[in-house]
Image (tube, rainbow, N blue to C red):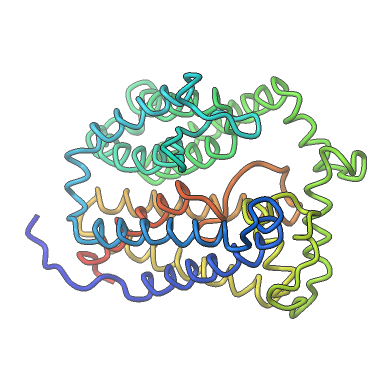
Length: 366
């Protein structure tokens, strides 16, 4: 593609690095007590997060310098590889079982979560798929139906793990891309109704999901069981007040809120840094998403537009679900907060995705 290359979006890069830095600090603050108790090293999780961040940053800067249209050429191969890994993770002896979910493949002392990388693989391939079938997108039979088949195939494998949170992010991201591509609104109305029925079926099929719904409606009905996490999260957010208890001064991390460095790290942020700190984090995410949308609107071709939109949608949906869960607005589901929660696969994937976004920004008219 004969397009003049410029420097990456500086604001997007800086916001990502600031969020990453805050995440490393908060992972240490949230996990120090638990890490000292379990591993005899208060820096156990922080050191690993720092290592994940280093790997992710290297990947981000490498990808930032790879022309994004190359991903269109290899998107099918990448998707097939991710499909193979999704199947492999379900095989006992290969997939690692954690908290009732077989979502990881162990690699030495570390493990990877294939479903995380499937999200980016789907963004890369679906962008190509939508462009190639653009003239059929308003047709349900020739356009929307094959697209939905492509989206729900990996979703089905992810649900076999099971991992409703990651599956929801993947479907939400892909459906957003399909909607923007020009699909008929009335098709989405029917799709939404079928989605509600399907979601209800998924909830009913698993007793633990029903407990999550009931605990969301009234966590005090089972305060030591299904409602425990929600109650402890709210107990962290409430005392934080306007300015917080102070960095490192969380009370809920003293074995009240389970593994606070993971999905509920925003509760610890709100407790230690208060409403001001939590709002600052959300403002950073809003700034990142705004710059991402600018990149999408200014991309030099349709593929760049779809890919950047997919990355922005993925981050936005994940942030909304995580913060919604932590603040009690939606039922509990296992979703990390991008750049902030502890986790190698999630952090690496997010930095990779931002790397792609930064490369598109080098060619976009901002």
